[in-house]
Length: 393
Image (cartoon, rainbow, N blue to C red; front, side, top):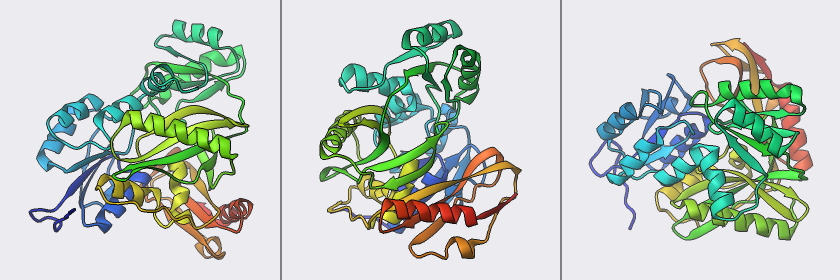
């Protein structure tokens, strides 16, 4: 029998979030709905999840010693990574000491950089991927491009939200793409992956939930990215039955190899009946924010249920839905959102304002959500909302 005590009392459960962005904020809210004490960590003050957590700490999570000292002080029942830039060797060590890392320390270690997960998928599990090479030096990088061919995609092995990612369309792009990858990595300069261009009809995120009752799949999510960063997503993405079955097989294989409990965002390219694996995140996915309006239990609620060992008897989908990221450009520590009366005038629409304290250059600050009779109607709604929204910096 599962039993949770009272917050701040003996017998209460405690969760520690490694990363406190917009995804972490929703996880924190779902944890608190079930009476779990929440501690939020991030590299800057007043991060979104910190605003709803019971306590918070500011630190670089690449600082293994400081991370370990906080964890040993707090002694959480669950350690929940929400970002890639974490001192994963420290998590591996802490797991050996008895701490519960979600989904596992090894899964976090393998997916923190693109090399670990790509080698697991392609070289150990035999899953179809795009052609790729890794390069640690500029000379190796140029050799990788020669072997893969142009056009190709260049990414730091450690980054997210498209940071440091670019496309080499001609030889004149080679130097700039290397520079972007070195500047855009979460842990600073380092190794890159050079990927062959994939010809695809569409790309999906197949949210896959490992829970006490087995493995379940959410309806596939289609999405549009710009410079590697999610801009829009919609659910369900129409797919042929054979392609969906292949996607589910790939997702079950890769998440099974990673192990543990929780939700995984498995990204794949689809061309006709063929499915090509791209990446996997062992945590809720940004494209999955659409589930905050498309489902009875969002990806965050499902993640928390799985982590806590609670049953997931069904996943109820409410119909065609869409999300659109609000990316603010500029330099400000005082961003405001106006004209919300018009933004929310249509039925079945919502907005989530993340509460990020500042923006420099560009930053995702909110998301727009809508349901419709069709995917096209849902997309049209979020675009109308976007055009009505006024952002002041």
